[in-house]
Image 1 (cartoon, rainbow, N blue to C red):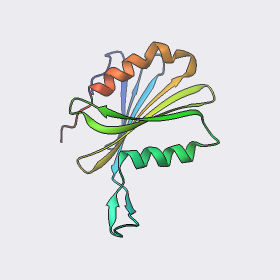
Image 2 (tube, helix red, strand yellow):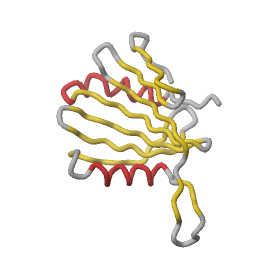
Image 3 (tube, rainbow, N blue to C red):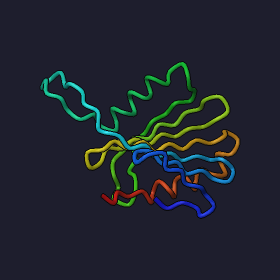
Image 4 (cartoon, one colour):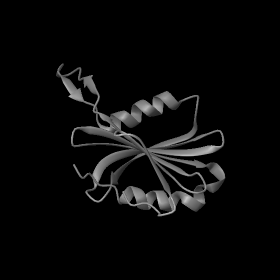
Length: 135
């Protein structure tokens, strides 16, 4: 993922990287295993999709966040299908982008102070557009 040279990178572990701007904007990338669920029509376990992840997150945010919206997106240079969920929590605006690719689940989170979103949203979009899987 391309990022501004003034941003700091913190690799907490192989599955979690945080990009932080000098003004404390955060973009987090969390990689995990794809969850499984039971499909009532076919009974075998199946992988949860990015859309399912967004729907589950939407349900979990009710009563905690406000102005929740979700929409289908494509992510990165390979145009991975994903779902974006935007919402407000007190003082902050968050966009979580969920995608499933190469057997892994990716959550890319943009966290910003509500008053600064107009200043940094385009940087987040540029970073998201540059996302690519190397392995």
